[in-house]
Length: 281
Image (cartoon, rainbow, N blue to C red; front, side, top):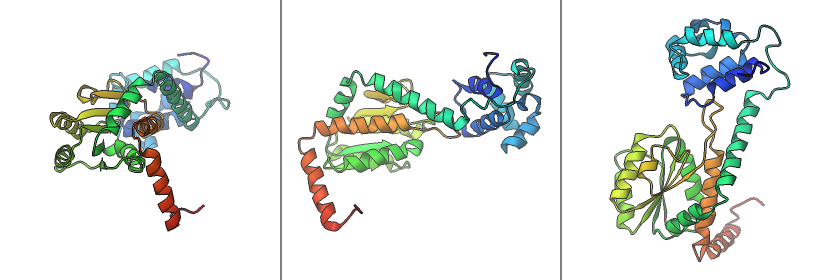
């Protein structure tokens, strides 16, 4: 770690690259807020500060690669500055850092889209499926819902699958029987086992699986025919998914380009919406 960094920046650097649970992120955020004091807190005191249990603090230290909290605290004392302000007033706070991290994720996505062929190929596959099932469970449910909402304006038969349970495979079977030849999946951490199982079933049913995931190495990668990665932000207690959301919209655009009547459907919707006074202008 750079000796000129603020205590908060040093802590942020320590946490980077680790997949932490929401509870562990809460501990991390509490540590950043009290960066100058943390090297001198006991595990019980840190637990009280974060509002978690003492065993959660121990598990947090192990998740960072230490034998336990005492080892983590010794490390923090070694890298803590001997003197100086507890907070660098010129450094971005944790909320700003989260936004900057998302901006960086979008930059990486823009670089990946320099070669548009993977998205164009996925768009062609989805445009040709009647019906088009769109799957997203738990954290990915919102992404699936957003895509399905807009896709339904240009695609004749979009089927949203955003709830798990014993009927999920039945709904995939029903889509396949109705003529579907592809399924779009949004998959974000933490990845539900049920989502992986659903994709295995979709492939066994003859569907081509197109997946928007947080990484090319996500658990769903091995059961996807076309994988489009877009990183999530991990700087807050819960993941932020700006890049996967934008990639979903890009994929939707590519799909529209392969639906010859997409523009006519949009114009028809606008006409009906105006007649109903659906929107406040």
